[in-house]
Image 1: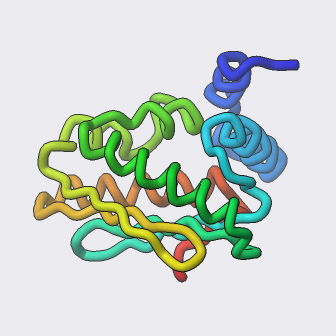
Image 2: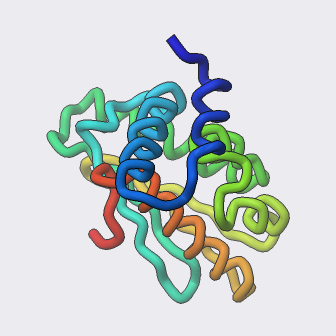
Length: 157
């Protein structure tokens, strides 16, 4: 069984082209994600919605299972607190330290407003900035997540 470190290394070593390579990367991201995210990725959907102010990330339970919803809410609330402090360790662990947009978000976290709120079947994190460079970084970061999460993510609610 591979460790998180060896999986992360394998992800970073993958070429960026080819359908098979993309499918392999998405499978590996899902495997690492299951170690970082406490809820069932197969029973949830991530939505990344870009906006002029930055964007909104929503995670919801596909079956509205109360335990799943609670796990999603706890995770997103904790992530929003970490992100507001500039701690993007979890996305880096899942997607790699060189994830598109990540460096800019870490460096500019003090110019971001990151807020969490509960939704009926999960929760959302709202990313806002008046800095066009950070808004572009949020959009780039969302695109990277959409590609890496594949069928588990979409770009509109």
